[in-house]
Length: 496
Image (cartoon, rainbow, N blue to C red; front, side):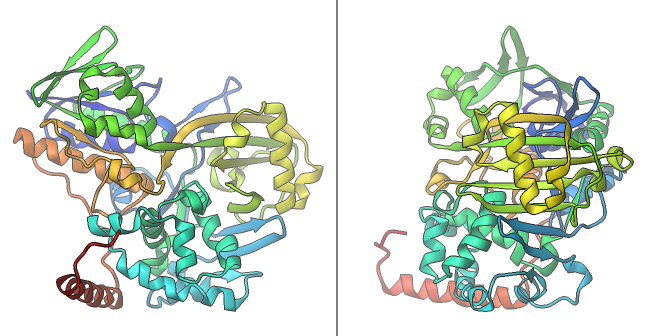
């Protein structure tokens, strides 16, 4: 039986392992942590309370993850929820459930149905010229290379977006979508993220949430299915080296343990992959892996607060901006979202900070009052409530940083080693998805490369993103035709 080793038990690794186990491979999943799921999973505190490394939403375009949920025959999600956005001035935006409203051609539904409280119409209209960039960026390799060296801030400035629209709408989206301020985000990743989550189709911004931790609700039954299919999931296995012969990986080494492999799939984040390369003399001989040193990740701070009384929070999920110049944050009403807190006598709130560099070094005693003061600005009733319990989880270098120029150093699924394949939300793919859906999809793509390489089993069925609407397809066809004619007439010697 052909042996496959998968490294990293997040969405990508579990996805690859599950499919390969179903195809009859002897597949072993190695997780460096003490439980499957990586940063997405949750765990219990000493007091038996559930915590996790931040809350993760599941958006309308997550077609493959929703298909997985159906396959697992589980029901982990809430109904579709509405969300709000706050600044220090108070409520700024409320979003409806877009799929419940008459469907309009994109982006009209998003533009008309979103309920802006303060942003003037003239500022919103200044976004119209940006539509050309969204049409020009078609997720192709050429488009990524054309836009990746430009910062998001430069992009919005170039297309005439007003300062107020940028600071009150686009940059807040970047801070909670790409986890960094606009001057630190690739314009290519920005366009891809905005189009996938918000603008491609009217319902795309609709979201559901797990009714508990992802680890309990999804990963635990998923691991059970993998085990039933013959897969092995091993925790506390940190990769220290690869044994390579020519262009073939022969074994994966974890300290004193050696796992022989006919194929290997890496499914870890950037920071973990850089550590593996730093410890692996064999990978350091290859420039594609050495170049990963040019990639970076972003700090996240996840806090969970238990208050002594019920507090009315208008919407269960909320994004916030303007409290710190380079940090975005979100807060969630867990009494409304998580089953275990529905009957809680007090209020349980998850508050997550992204690009949280300035908070990571603070003590819990310093962080909790800051969190409560920020919450009070949004919902004044928090001022009189007492924190009776709390959890603070520091996650340095936790999420992918799509910085300007980073695309050239990111890896495709295929590597220079014939039987080593890559997956994760930072891996190059033409699928068009982002975040958790992208990680899962690249896991399936890597599994398919293994199947094709070892010539055993069937490929996983990967659902494509929903096709562009007809007017977008037409505009992109015209744009590509004009661009092609221009290249045939004028030499292509300008910087991209």
